[in-house]
Image (cartoon, rainbow, N blue to C red; front, top):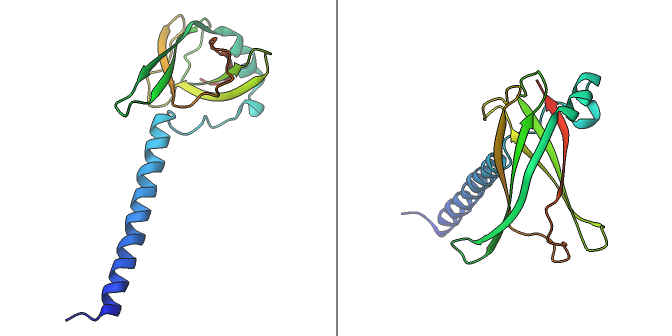
Length: 155
């Protein structure tokens, strides 16, 4: 027969283990939704070749939409198309999304990675659609699509 002290310890151990498992699951989901870990070199550490190549990345057909999720909350989507106009295969790409208010002041700055080691590379001349979802966008956003700027590229 277990004493109340042993029962209490078992409960605490169970709670700690459950908390650790939950934290690992949440971290995994966040990494998967964000497209994996960031490129190995941040935009400030780009080579001259990579900096020059950013001009070969075109983002077009940028549009916003919204839908209700299964919980009844509104989710906002950005749909766009990325094109590799250069001569190199792009294996990773990081884009900056800048949302502004009616006074053109930045209200939200997000980074997204439409090309990652988990996706197929973007070949020269190839275009690909991508989608980014936002559960919360500031209420003072001016409702126009964000400015999308290539910030990092890996070959």
